Length: 177
Image: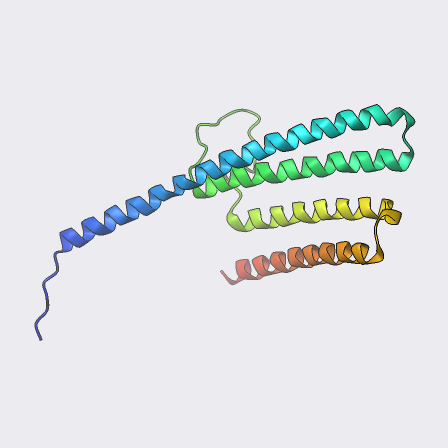
């Protein structure tokens, strides 16, 4: 049985070139993060619009309407925080470290959130946003059907259970290492 002699230098060169190309492809994610920052700008515009509309109505608003207005602002703020977490940690985990950003206000978690922790933080934010939507729905209970309310509760419980299961899975896999 004759073996075909391999040219190790040629195959190693191809392998290195392929690996460099694959590694460089991580930069394809950068435009996604720029797009998310544009989405954050859109959230800010909606926040300012809602804040101005809310402040105009406050002097004559009922207490429940003020609470709903504040909950809407909190909801938008949480969504903005979610975008920032995804952009910063996603960029640092998958594209490049932000080593050149040495501002004194740099968040402590930057550079230290791994993918598992990011998933938990994202799910916690989603649960919080879902809880705010649910609370707003309960405060406007007459505006929704029983079926719609049931679905909101089911969706929220699904998010909560998913978060608990994800945390348990991460804890179990961490203890197995």
